[in-house]
Image (cartoon, rainbow, N blue to C red; front, side):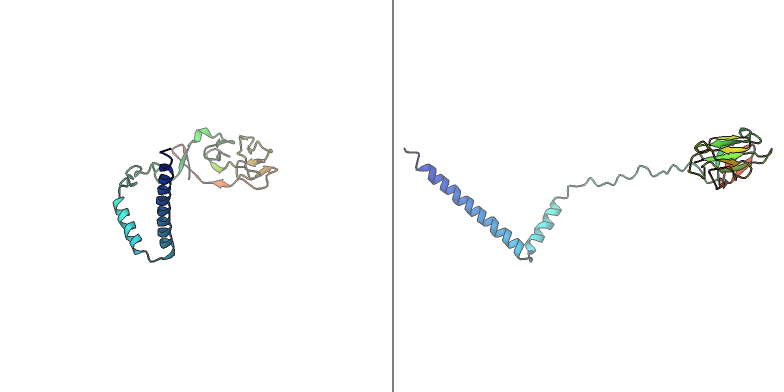
Length: 171
Ligand code: FES
């Protein structure tokens, strides 16, 4: 019986305080949104930005990777292998470089793209003076890359090689 009057009074106070706080917030929000001339706000923003300059972890650690691994000097060419690897009247396919080196006659070396002009397969075999594509059976003459038999209709593009000291180098 004696506690009952307190509760409503207490609740009423809380209600008043809450209402006042809500009204204050509403007023502030309205002021900020309505009038654009809020010089006080910009000042406070600057101050807070200065105070919050704790971000000293800038990505300034660029000391790694300054040495570019350009080991292959510009002396020109990609070494392919020895001339002894290329049989006379035949050829050798260098898969990594996508080229085929042929030796139509002793001491004469030719180089062609190893990518078939039909549909882009890599030629796989050299025999009988012909570079063979395994996909659809096209063949190309080892002397000039011209079509020996289809379905390809265009020759293998020629590539430049140099021969020095028994070594073949792709230009
Ligand atoms: Fe070579 Fe078709 S891709 S014959």
